Length: 242
Image (cartoon, rainbow, N blue to C red):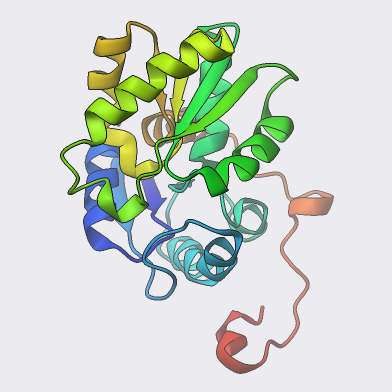
């Protein structure tokens, strides 16, 4: 089985971190390959960034289809391009916010999201409204650390731990969801310090894709997720014409 984990931003060091987290939970016989798009923003911290990340993400999905990839993980907490990726992929495609939020509902009655920047909180609330029952997501809290500083700032772990504790108390939640793929390596340390389940979407999505492929479940091609209609595209998107 081949699972392609797509980091929708173009920062290779983050792709390396994401790949290590995904490989750590992959089962025997599962090959995990993490890829960095050739075009897009270095980090995704706005709706603008997210929109411009999607063409590079889709190019990696299309390339994966040509090379026989069985399933995909979209490793950004905004789950950019998820529906479009499902249109072009035969196998399952899972976003890390989608997987993390679903997993959190199996571990407790309510969860809090701890993320990077406050400006992304609205997107997290929107996704929670799509993915989980009303009231399951009790709150979204930002540590105000830019994505690209997660790897280099030595205060990241204590700040995330402190914010997680505040979130649990403020929201009355019992599970923490980490709201950025760049936080994947913090999961165990945060859980040990706050004493509740902490869910990382990279590992959750990898295991969910692996399970779906094992079950023989592919993306339904009835109606909405059917391949997009063939038509020409112009300009820099000319290569995306079906």
